[in-house]
Image (cartoon, rainbow, N blue to C red; front, side):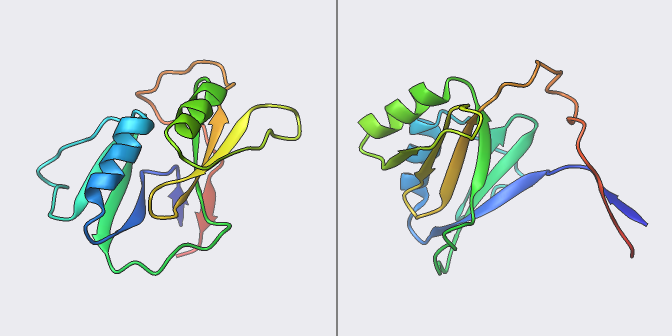
Length: 139
């Protein structure tokens, strides 16, 4: 039996020629750090650190994204991040959670939807995977 422990990385599509706009959005506006790794780097790809996990962007044939599909990121000062995005002419939807916790939705330049949530968990050692619910699959 196999046990899935956590997310290692997320890959989102980028239309051909979109890496410059992707870098401007993810690095310039969201402040993610680009990861360069000779094993990962290939033409048409970008990689960004998400804590101990990774966001991969890959150019190719782009067919669009389902409206409910999204990447959720825990961030500090989500209202300030949302305001910075709005001031950069990004469409931002300020949508607090039912308990009033701040949350915003924004789309990257290619229509990939991002949910940004305030990280209200107690600090943990980021070098170790967080305790997550495991899913068991029969193989």
